[in-house]
Image: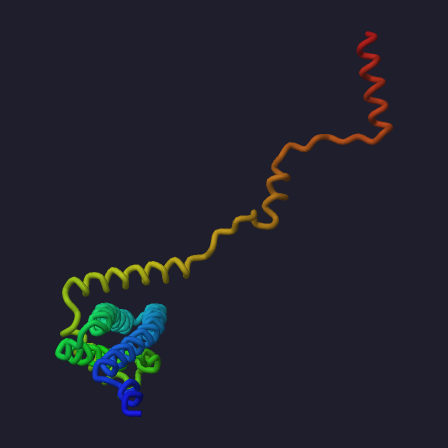
Length: 212
């Protein structure tokens, strides 16, 4: 009986592998949630531009850029976790596992803060609480966004503005406007038409002219 119990006992190696795989699965799940938030940020930016509020549109795009950076961190952490999971199958690397789990938890916390669609919608509110939240986010992002990021964000803003302008332009009809065909026909020279009797007289006159 003692041998069977020792065989079924969960070792520290088994626990470490399980923890790493659970964290990897969480990161993958959070990635999907962040992608939904990214789409919402773009919708908010479009709405703000349509209302003429460039400042709110810019803030939404800044948040989107920051969340994209979190996704990049997630991708790197997933690679690290995969490598640790594979290496731990051959030997227990305790410090590396603990560091990997610590870094993974840090990324998870950052992503979890950004996975709220309601928080995105607060960017459009004009209440005192919402404005305070917007100012807080703007201040926080100022330390996270580089000058290169700012340029990319401004380019995206200009692209969205151009799309909004194009969407407001009237469409050029593919088919002619009703009534224009009739007007064009009216401008053409009219061919005289004759009744059967008049046609017979014309034939007679032409025959007489030929005999003369």
